[in-house]
Image (cartoon, rainbow, N blue to C red; front, top):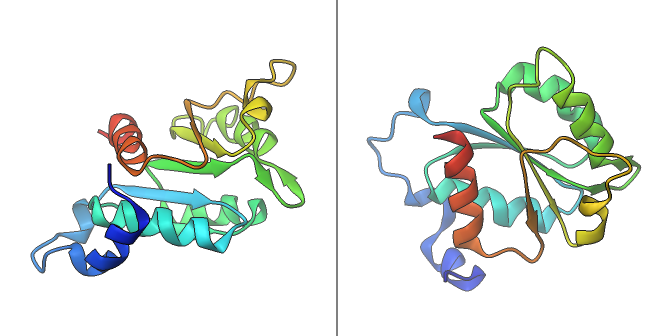
Length: 143
């Protein structure tokens, strides 16, 4: 299992080779109100060969989807003034965005499990997350 220290030593974005073709890279949108989590996830996914865009709140999602065109969205449940489950439900019931896989992430496992308001997410990753598991799930839904 890789850890945060190993990632820092590897240098994040410098991991990609000079020959990497950005046009063919799969795109992941990460939405979390914690800057440290955004940084770590971005570094992990960058090392895995994904193009990553980050949002620190739920209000930027629609514009970012239009401009970035993600192949997958990692979405925190607790987004400060927004509920990520409601954002997910809105995305999944919209004809323009419903095809995009959404993986919810949260330290509050019971918030995801609540059945009174299913968010229609494709999967869930608990925080703190295992780096290998995060990469495996993202690859599973993108490829």
